[in-house]
Length: 116
Length: 116
Length: 116
Image (tube, helix red, strand yellow):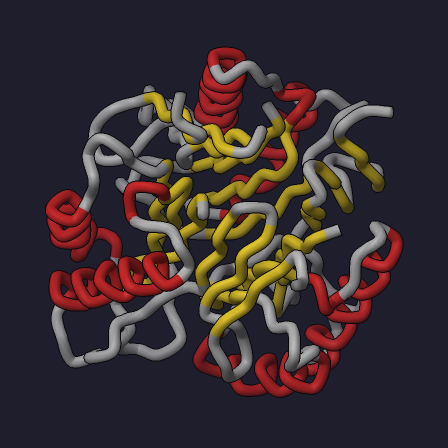
């Protein structure tokens, strides 16, 4: 077996595992008509599913980057969805910034790295 | 003992250690009335402290991301503070971009990953 | 031998290797008068060279971040250059955002982490 496991298709993998570390692609919401709260919740659910499939979980996330299309407007709502989802006994490190994303209605994108 | 060590509180950890690698949250200055030089120096001092606490040091940083609120205006001043602080025998990789950050007076945020 | 190998000079390393993982600095094109297609191709060639020197290759990239100065205008052209270069059997995870970069004519910057 290779020392690197990959899953997903398209122009990048959804998940790559190496050296007991799980790298996820930046994840965006499926329903881009939703507001930032629902987009964030959708992303966090997708992260849960991808980590479970990789033999990890949200309690084993090491670090996260959160990108918001409009940080002044959406920081508080994203944080509320984050706080409700978070395993407060096992929090990752995090950084949050503002970036225009792949399409104008992508309000939030989250990148995580986790321990397998 | 868990294979993951975490420190910090709030909505994310300040430091997470796994697999001999230390992940720090994006760090911003404490005094947000300061100019970009002082904000960068403050951040670099905080990085030093967090790495020491984690059993690492600036000489063991692997990679850094630097985010500036205004890259055209502040790139040179940030670089000067960086150059004064840097262990030139043991430089990390780095990438620098522009991003509006958590509040309008956050002029710079730095994310580092280090070896324990 | 140290547990960390570094190459490059200036104010950051070009490549840092630790724990079987290769960290590259954000790479920009050498010819900044070129369009986004040529800038992306140039960056991907530089990534190939840096990874080869580090004992890795594009087939062992774990994760990538792509930053575009203008994502609405340049996303499709960057993706086309990416798709032509990619080892489709061994794709990294990826995230793409918009960021003003180190100089106004830097249209794209790519950061990768690979397995040695």
